[in-house]
Length: 461
Image (cartoon, rainbow, N blue to C red; front, top):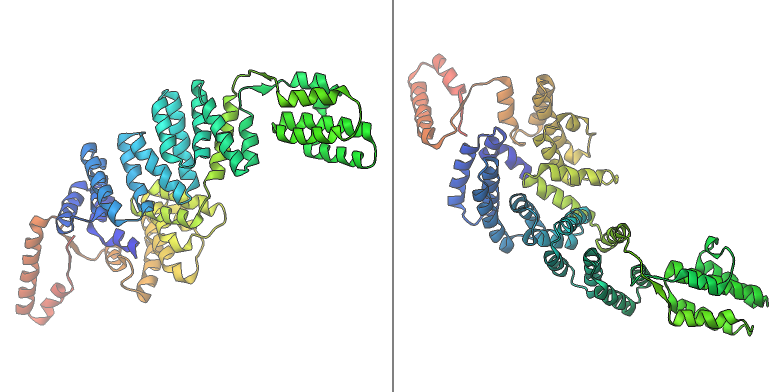
């Protein structure tokens, strides 16, 4: 179990104690023994970041990233990019891969948060070229790429060509919904007043029936022979399809139905003229509407994958990104989805951020995961000063599984049994010599005097 390492490995113990120098010394020794382990460089980067040595932190994060690209799955690179971003700030080299990985693995909120924050930042700083590169690097489909280029460039008074291309691509795919959505922004709006003047139906803009419903009513009236009423409803549906749907192809179909009525009405010819060459009025772009459309499309583009969300929660936890891990797991729990298989990572991150009360309040899990919850409750009680509760729980686990986590050592410490801590490498030899001396005295001493020496424990950190 990986979590066990965080409590048994001496490096993590020193990190918890904020003794970064000792942690760094041990870690550098491990790197000498295993120079191709990306996790070690990432952890060393964390230590340098804690001590304010950002250049050294960045150097180690980039070493970790370089090795990880050959050894790890892409989703496991995400925490490294996030750590690099904390130092370098917002830029293409981190935001493109973060968004790309999040998009690929269905991490919807991660993708949206990074995309929107960077998008807004580029607009506020007026970095047009960087914004274009960001969108072109991220989206491969021409339709989506041009759609988002329009959303971005419209803020610079540009992007109409991208809008035309996006509409054309969606029309080829038969994606009517996106065609209708984007045509709202195209070159201004249809001259609605002129259309109302042609149709001459009082209160037409106040009608509440959807254009599809109005068309159905017109066809019904047409079928029962109420030609005059059918004509007015056909005209009303044209108004609806123009104003609400921006669907001129549908309007052309309706004009054919009106002609088939055989009623001499000048409005039919004038409406046909209008639909063939719709006069437009130039309108100011509504940026709130554009941004709303952008957010809606991001929701549609990224398909959330809950299992990958659980995985990244665990990856964040083991990468010491505890706040990010908690946010991920709690977003899953809010959806009433179980995280039992990853519960130890959630508990570990809660523990490392001092959320002891929250750990204690968590309800019992299935029996297979019960001990891990009990363990974290016990060490939370210990932190809160409730030693009796901690001892009771830890003793119960120890009886069943004495090798569980660091439980034996923790029990000895809580009970106050003598422990000699020798953290530095340079004094390890002295500790070993002390052991040898103790053993020698023990052998030479009478039996009754040897008892104390035999029970003495030396733990070398």
